[in-house]
Every structure is written in structure tokens, then in C-alpha cells.
Image (cartoon, rainbow, N blue to C red; front, side, top):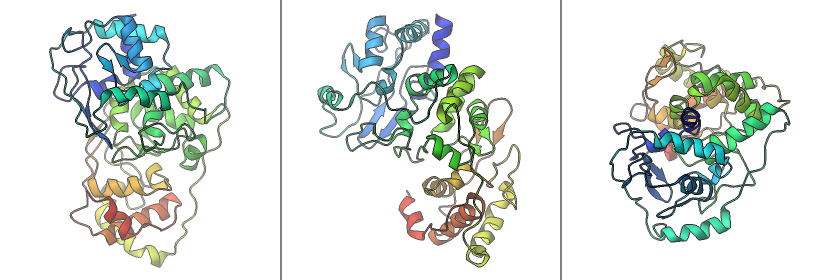
Length: 373
């Protein structure tokens, strides 16, 4: 049971919120920004004073299923909105694993929330309005793999927490499951079968991505990088196949080819000049990328995304060095916020999106300026 719990805790990505970069495993302290204030991952080691050492298995399951801990209501920053679909057997296995860990006497940090969000008792009313058992499926299937993938995506992996839009009170938009989320600096892209096919994804490529962090469509970055680093790379081949099957469906649509450029050469000339001067050294003159250095721009999923937000933010902020499973890595990409103007970055974005993403040249200097920190 402990071994199974360890596997499930990884599949559920518990470490991402409950293990800080310089702290003891599962001792909390991870800073979680939100539109409502700042939350901090809690201590879930068996320490009886600061962790969950005094909790019973029933109380642990209630926290996962109902968002209620022995000390009171839990904010929905803890994804019980998805974990409530988890089976009791899996909850008990995770509990057994956590109770086998070394206790860490690390004090929890209180959430820093303005009024009225700091009124924790009000969470019970939020639940009455918004807590639901399951979201509608966006893909179709009936196979054993599809059903297992549904459980992994919706309950264990809680993918909807990031990849589904939210309403003004932070509730998951049940009418638009997997239509994309905007909570973080990097937006979580849509995971519907149609949107995945539009960006060139197949079930095979998705499985490669979850296993290694790298696929022909690009590499994991932003908040998806720790998902691969801490979670999906440790999942079994069968489970990753099931997860990928659920996302695209039992009869997936064929990945769409990149559309022909929609702008003329003269319109993209300045963007091409900027690309050759600042980007081609790593990404290749023809967008082919360089193994172990930088991903291809040609047919890149971020470049093919209809919303240019993530591309603009990546160019402004850069992307840190990425160490993937095995010996694979991607070098640091510098940000160009201090070296290129809004107009230059807009021209560069339009060249990338039009030439290799099949998107129109609609990015403006105002679009870039609005994303500067």
C-alpha cells in the first residue's frame, strides 16, 4: 500500500505544492499566487503539531473529498474540486505513504488574503454554490484506456484545475472543461481534442511529452515543467498511454498540418531580420531547433496557438534552463524585454506565428506592452 501510495502521490503531483525548493519533502512552504491573494502549500508530513500526523485516514479522505480538515475549511487552492473524484482506496494508499515519511516540524504559513477572502468560514458557502462532482467529458470513448485516462486526468492529475477557465469567484467553469486557463503568467492551453489537433498533437506525441518533457511540438515550460519534472515522468507507460488516449479520445482527429503563411514576404521582412539576429543561433535559421539546446520553432505548439499570450510572455521573460528525464536538457532562453522594443517583439512574434505557426500577423506593439511586467 505504501508503494502504491508513493506512486499515486507522484501522479497527483503533491510535491509541486507541498515541497519547497529548499525544504524537507512535503513540509510545505511553496508560494502559490492567485488573483485572490497568496497561498502557501501546507506541511503534510506526519508531524503531529504542524503536519497531518494526528489525522486519521477518514479525516484525510474528507480533506481530499470535501475540502474539510480537522481544523476547518480548506481553501480551494487545494484541488479537492478534482480530488473529490478519487477513490477511497487511492486516498488510503496516499495517506499510508505520507504517514511513512519522516516528520518535519515546519510551521505552516498562513495565506495572505485581503478582505473578504480571508474569511475562511465563507468557503462553506462557496462550496454550496460551486463544488461539483465531475466535469463533462470533452473527448469520446468507452475503452478501458479511455476510462482509466479519465480518472487520471480528472481525479488524480487534476488537469482541469489549470486547463479550465474560472469564474469571477475562482470557480471552475463547468461549461467549458479543458478550454484553457489564465491563472498563471503562462496560460494553460486548451486540452480539448479539437484544440490539440489544431496545434498538431497526437496521442503518441502527448505520451512522449508526458514521459520526457519534450516532443516535436516543443518542451514543457512554465508551470507544466514541474508537472513533468515531479510527476508525469514517474508514471507507468500504461497510465501515460491511458491519459493521452482520454485527452484525444478513442477515435482522435488527425493532427492538422500548419497552414501556409498568410502574410507576404515584405510584411514579415523585419521580423525575419530580428529572428536571424537574435534567435537563429539556438533555434536554427529555418526554425529547425538544435538537439539538447533549443526546441524547433517550426510547428511549435506555442507558435501555433491562436492566442499569442504565451509566445509574447516567453519572449519578454525568457525561459530558465530545463533539465528533463535522462540526460536531456534545454539551455536557458534569455528574455528580450530589455533589448527589444514592443514594436520589434510584435514583428518577431508575427514572423514566428505566420511563418511556422499558420497564424495571422495580428500581434501589435500594444499586445506586447500589455504583457510587460
